[in-house]
Amino acid sequence: MPDPVIDDASALVEASRAGAKTKPTVHCFFDEPTFTASYVVHDPETKKAAIVDSVLDFDAPSGRTSHASADKIIAYVQEQGLEIEYLLETHAHADHLSAAPYLQAELGGQIAIGREILTVQETFGTLFNAGPDFATDGSQFDRLFADGDRFRIGTLDCVVLHVPGHTPADLAYVIGDAAFVGDTLFMPDYGTARADFPGGDAHILYRSIRRLLSLPAETRVFLCHDYKAPGRDTFAWETTIGEEHAANIHVHKGVGEDEFVAMRTARDATLAMPTLILPAIQVNMRGGHLPDPEDNGTRYLKLPLNAV
Image 1 (tube, rainbow, N blue to C red):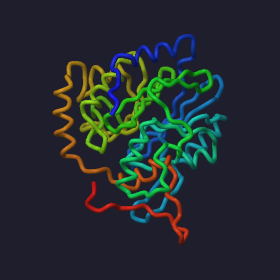
Image 2 (cartoon, one colour):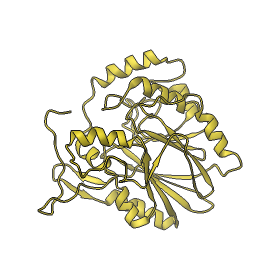
Image 3 (cartoon, rainbow, N blue to C red):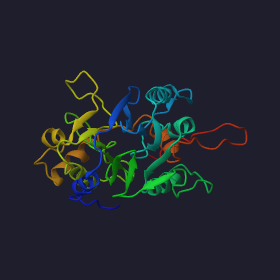
Image 4 (tube, helix red, strand yellow):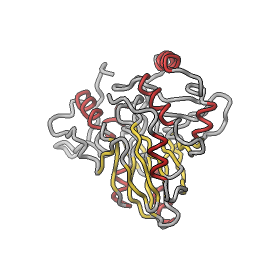
């Protein structure tokens, strides 16, 4: 697994900001059943936009999918007169199914993820015995980003940071003064992502987080999840790099790598698997597309027994 460079994130981002518009408008859609924060981020000047980490509604007992959450995003985009250029995934999520293909059909844009999705596809394609027709080359996505890649949303310069550790393919998208960090960090009072999934590594997670914390302190940080820390009664999904650096209960300033890894390893050993991990990974490794129908016209998700 690639070991991210710790000290270059701030330089990458500062270089991208030179002479550019830096303040995107960000609107959150919080899905309480999966505790997921999805975002529409747009350039106020041009109305060009991206959707980050969308949710496809999935009722596990019945096996039914629906689009109420995605339709709220569509309504907002249309009301604001936005043009979607990207549907960004921070990683192949284990706790919700992506609605990116549905949103793309309605709104356009390119579906994008990190190029290390190939590692995820290889690992989970084998686990689910996906067969020879399942491509492990990332071709289900329109764009595969590498660390340090840059792109634009209207006048906004955007930088891609590879931040593995939770999974091999995690990315953070720094769009103007806003960083969308996926599952790598949570609110300061809740801590950090788990690192015990296949391909996860607590040492690498620590280094990725330190890399994120090298960003400017005023950088707005938008999180993919919140679970309400003990003593907090409301959901929250926005903080800053400065607040994370000062107060994150797992990785604030002064916490060393060995201390973090010991804490993370012990904590991960107590955690159950996410409720939707098996259906979610099967869909998300396909770019949010459902498996192809079988000869009876029905699509199926597999449940590997005693394998995870």
